[in-house]
Length: 196
Image 1 (cartoon, rainbow, N blue to C red):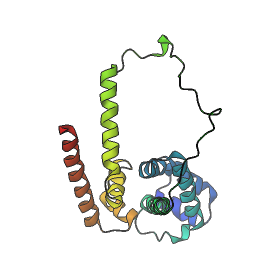
Image 2: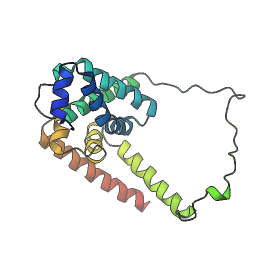
Image 3: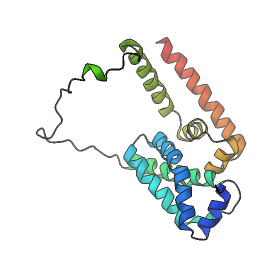
Image 4: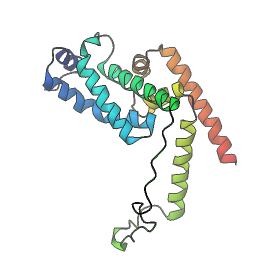
């Protein structure tokens, strides 16, 4: 028997570790994708996923039963990600350069012919597809933070308008407005980039 999110959350509030584990199994992957989309850093996304789940366990009583546990979890994750981004902006991190003797060699090993998928896209098509993905990723990254968060929750986390509103703590009308702004701006930027 599969319990609903509300039932799982009620049990988590009563400190039921099995219910918490089931909730984690249900939402770890979507939360990870959401955080990765916001941060574009796998290690930071994984750290914040663990922090989100830890807070869900420790502060489960803060969920008041209104709205969905999914929206509450995404709100916790989004707030943690936004705080992380603000912290990064305040103090820029510089990557450590590896000493020359530890740096990876420039040459990649040759790929045996039997491993190449001949049914896949040709090199030109694959390059064009990769360039289009990179362009879209760059255009999304250029959106204002609050519009980007709404866009990711709607399209990547596949949340409804009401859930996004709960997750971000804003009215549904604001979600719609931000989504409209983001899609309109992306469409305009895409046309401009394609015209270049």
